[in-house]
Image (cartoon, rainbow, N blue to C red; front, side):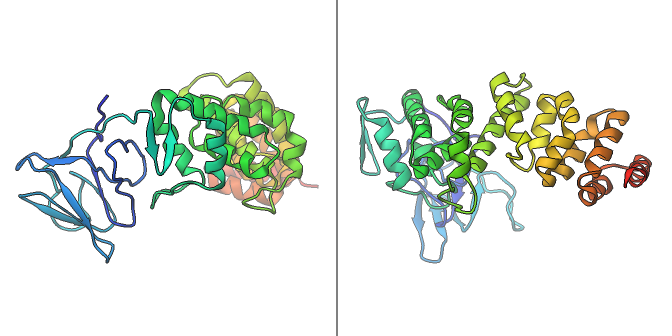
Length: 334
């Protein structure tokens, strides 16, 4: 199936990636289209990378220099009119068997071994693309029908005793949150919580691997919120248990407030005691609750982290309720 750059192809300077193969397609970040033709002269659009960081694009009737990135038809950064006339010719599917960056891929590929090797030493890192497992993410997006085999193999690495492989697998599912095998994350966090707590993150040795695992778990909780579907009960239960120990991202109260607001209000004090830095986000999360609940949650949290709560009330609660809440906090102070 031929796919097209939507809404229009992107031009990039030399600090970003212009792939040599036409099957490269669909990145959200700055990756240039390598399959363009001019609507006017009908010539293929060609490009030349220059030493000063400029990529020079041209056809028979017009040309354009790009230093950063530019999507055809967008408003330019200068006073010139939008550049138009070049259209994406389409990108074919990536089909197996194939060789990608020197790696032979076919239907008999050992995807688990490949994933582990790519985490440790990626065959290629495209310039301008952020991410610690970007080669695996790129391959997963290219594989299409074979993608689930790769992502399930990556999920198998969540059970590894090698922190590097576990961290790489977590990074993969943080990027590919809907990939097959991602459902293994919840059980893995529950089953390996002690190991994750005791094992330093190979990328940030002062932090335990549990921090990244908790971030991924809460990200999966947020997927349901973004789609309007009820939260997965197992994911929600695991997230609650983690939160009560103080493990979770900075916006954990927001995710819990969407998934189960009554539980959050009932355990607000427990969460702030476990992780005082959540106090401000808790005040923000309770903005959608009733005034009675808001007053109770805010005063309870203020009894544990008064300065943080006062600052958050000042930032997130409008008058006249702001003054009333601050007065209630002062009245409840010992």
